[in-house]
Image (tube, rainbow, N blue to C red; front, side, top):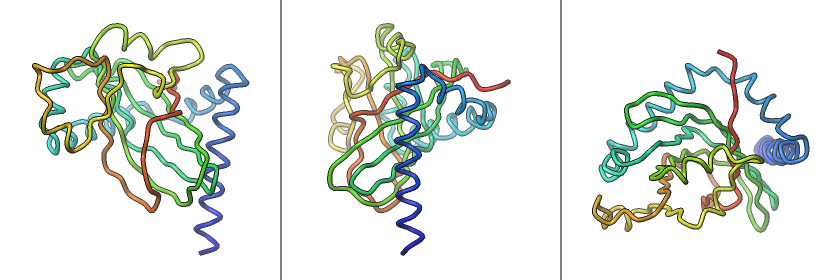
Length: 196
């Protein structure tokens, strides 16, 4: 039990520190994170996560065929005790399967929460405006996008290519761990440049 609490607190503090540095140091944390990223491994994990999502949610494949780009974060770690943090790395995949660039996501939350969990998420960027948000100076705060739709089980059943009218569709997948509720509010995305 002591180990679990220590791990949770450590994960939260690391995520908070990473978020604070990325906000205050003009991307210093992003550059540090990028240095530890293996781009080939991240590209392979992102493609695999997307294929797995397509297998589980056929509507995601239909949306992906119409998207300008798909940003996949195969593994996000979220932890906290009252104050929480989350973070992970991902790749922007073109509809033809090519990797365009790499990104990190970090976030901070507060309120009654305790535990640690892992999950992944994919953002289907449907137009050029949504695609341009990714490279906004200072990062893109995902929850601030007015045309972001998180696709849950019920919505997935009613979506078709004929009624796609949002700029960005989000799918959350592979939730593991003991922490309730996953949301994208407060998640910030920054481009990273890992060594080739």
